[in-house]
Length: 113
Length: 112
Image (cartoon, rainbow over all chains, first blue to last red; front, side, top):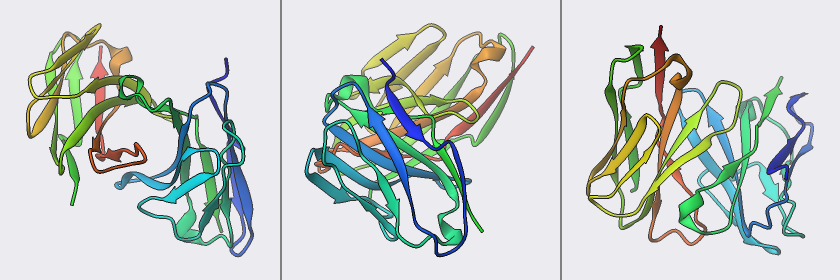
């Protein structure tokens, strides 16, 4: 039981490049979400999904796309990277029950130069 | 607008010196309040969920309490391994996606 797996762990991009951050969970969780964490800002929600085929925007969605074709996977795509997207990105999943909260991945540290 | 404010931003304790972390919140109906622990370079780790005022949860040296406006994370006789950043988050009733609104965290350092 791996929990929530994020790849890659580290990435450096040039401005304007695109890439996909991968997130996979093996707990059969319906709810998945992407957060970014910046110094002094706390965790902010980018996009979330309540099940396969259903996604919605969070607090800071601009510049990011998501899709949810399976229950297990929830990739985050950066369309044209900007230095403002330098951050640590966390994927999280939940059964939808409050008692267990969200399970977070170990994060992807992205630097855009 | 939903808000979560944690204080203090940083706290340094000696081993065995008990203290409390505060999380004050304003939300249009609370579905749940969460506490997480985050170690450097890692993702947040779930600690507790609290649902209603008066509720308390305990785990080892940690106890979380909830009122209508704030939550406290009490740390009794802390050890150096309790050093971490503690995050508070709320889930409003209006939120259909079970998304969490996080505070900025309290960085706790426990020295031997």
